[in-house]
Image 1 (tube, one colour):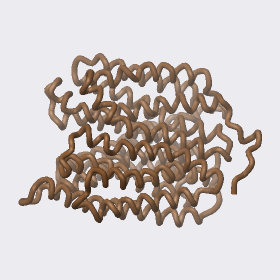
Image 2: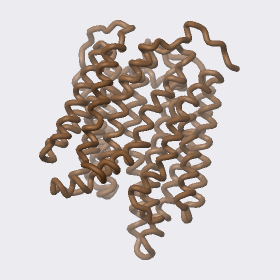
Image 3: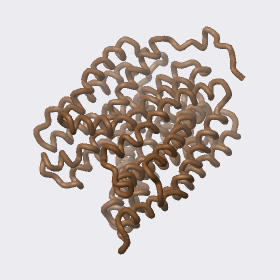
Image 4: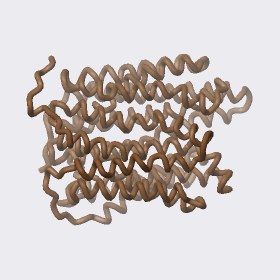
Length: 471
């Protein structure tokens, strides 16, 4: 039942400005990440590098973001929000300028690394401001808007990159973002305020090293699946190294008075369920974003540009439904938008799986729009609902955990479906189109199971009650 808004429900204009400023940085990071994938053939030709080398443009960036995001809760406790914002913004602008001018690939890679540090600080900052400064009754709406900001990037990134590479030059991918980042800087300086005091806290370098080993090993291991066997040293060795790092980090964090992340948040069963569903749904979404463009090109014989355009409407619709899902949560609670959204995701994936041998471009577009409506309704609300099970002192840690898994899920989802499709394409006989369609059907079936488990997890999690405090 809808409730009447009071003065305490009002969102201050400066808070909206702060979310806009931090959101522009996060959006810029996602746009560059997705747009640069289009430029790989051009970069390989211009800088005389191999496919394995050019992939480091994405891999290095993701590694750095994945290592910085987990310490966001420590950074929030230790440093003022405005100082973090200024640091992130200036790092990102510096990386953009370096890449725009880079005369060689090592310098281009350096610029991407600097951008990774900026994005790693900025991405959790937006949601920390929302969680801390938005009235509880409007939290769903603002989290939905925050999700829209980051979700619209993958929707426009490939098309943005394709147009600029074709019509102008790949360097304009960076230069066009500079005015937006400068505007973000001035808006953020004026609107970001500190509402909770910071406190001096030692930085635990062994934990930071274990985070680097964890995400370095896991992301590299899953990324190497496309070019190495599962039981090879680059894959298995890297994954084992990552798991050892994770075990050490977990043990150390649980025995420190001031860890980088308070893992006690995971003792809350409802939050842990939300976190698992959030991770599984991201695997499904990023796996699907790999399958569809490849299917459109290799099976339906569409160009890369047309393939990008065919998934653009679905991505845009999903981004627009994020704030709508948030408003439904604010008025009626989390169960309706989350369970409905995840059900739509499961059903649309099931439809793609059953029709995978004969998916036309227009059928893909239709089913993908349904899928993204479901993601728009459910994804942002998973974060909102999950973090509401934690008290204020643990919300930043929960936010760090969710954003960390979001980065890691990209490597898992892409590696999972690419390995399945590659195995199908390696089978002797038949045409590449038929083998790709068969492999895509198997990969889609795996994503159906993944998203169905996420739905079942949320049915259980939404039945849990209460919040959890640090001891």
